[in-house]
Image (cartoon, helix red, strand yellow):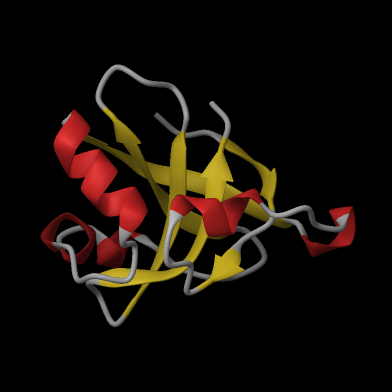
Length: 103
């Protein structure tokens, strides 16, 4: 699945609540999803309540991501749900930038 659009990425968000803040349209960044990672309910809840923890599933896929005019990022979501979190990793294993993906 390869989707694209534009969203406002937040640097070093701790929880999903950090991604819900109002923002200016000019702050939005174009993105393209290079891979979707679906987690079970418990793993997803753990992820969105502590996004700064090291995650093996991010490290395993970080090489697919890159920042440029269009950010190549991961979509992390709960299995069976359309919405999730767009992730741009840093140092391979944790979230540097993230944005809410409404699905």
